[in-house]
Length: 173
Ligand code: FES
Ligand code: FES
Image 1: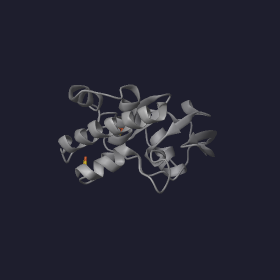
Image 2: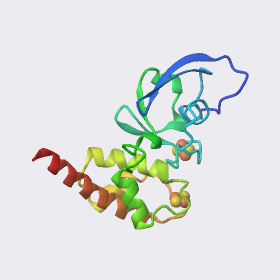
Image 3: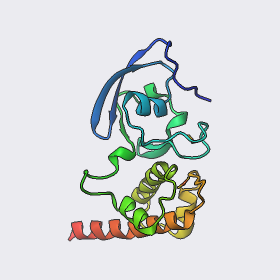
Image 4: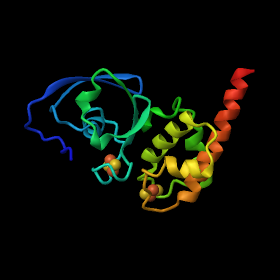
């Protein structure tokens, strides 16, 4: 298991690109990407649940995949592009369809798992824009919700898939 950053460890320079913004920082060699995002980049939308890769609360997008940032060494992503929940909405005025439709479905509940759930769902829809209910369940199987309101979350993913497909079709005509 990766350990949380400790203050006295020797630090090593790191250049991260998160949501299109550059962060030139210095962190311990064994720093977890989760801690670096939260503590060094100030991006606290990414949550820590279990800390051992079981709950998905810390999910971010790297190398085209949805990954648990609690299991990743930050230095493995030097100079790489990372997307966290803060980069999901196109701008401050407009939410991503997944965010809008989750609110509409009443799926936010306590909200703790939601950043990771949304990052997982975004990645799922990028890979499979028209998932079946079974594919949504399987795709988000690594994201646990303690409030257990999965039905509303899955409904939002289904509906967002449709909106994104319509948008894509509109862009292609
Ligand atoms: S905090 Fe990373 S998977 Fe639970
Ligand atoms: S919304 Fe509360 S843990 Fe999922």
